[in-house]
Length: 304
Image (tube, rainbow, N blue to C red; front, side, top):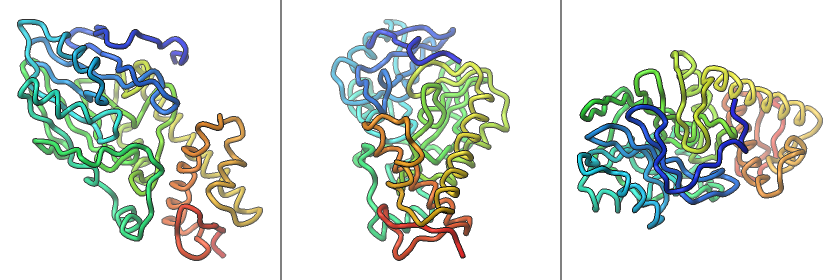
């Protein structure tokens, strides 16, 4: 697999990845977005823009500049409504007249468990939800989005976010933030659900893929191996959490500090949210319980 430092394209430049597919990197690097958000242009005449990205004027102009006189943008597809993927869709739609396709708004696809936690007051971890996002056209799991010379199959892949979708293009798949080569995906309740995330991993694993085009980082050229790594990685985190709770009751914060010993300080808050997602998943499996009310700061213990 390509090492992270090998992926460093120039922002704003349309790079052909294969016939009919180009990628433009947005200039929004960060510890959570790596080099920036990948925006994809699919098609030869009728273009689909997948994940326009954040509201950066230069990125909008880069997308428009990549459209040749014989081409036009006919579809804008948003894989999920995080601030680094969806906000530019509205302005791009205004400039081009193309409708916005997505699974739904920021709360669409949220699991029953997470809906209840949100209603009870559990807040997210400041992952940057685009609460104003609203597609023109909602697409369900299994729907086909078609343009001149291309077809995309919608695969609902909740976990990172309830409205997250992947897009199958023949034997390639646009996996957005569900599967990336540079890091594992953040799952942060109540917007993210680890039970859903694992189910989505297994669902993608059941198909044969040639390549994944992620929301951040380089193409994943060994997609099945990457999925197997993600599943094994999450299973190992679960084992570490259970081992920690076997010693004594603990919070998500204390478990994160114990388990993520090599994680930079800037990413510890995200690690804590990942641990919380595991804890809620383990509660659903009746393996652990919260001491008192379930919250982001609750202490947890093994079921007696």
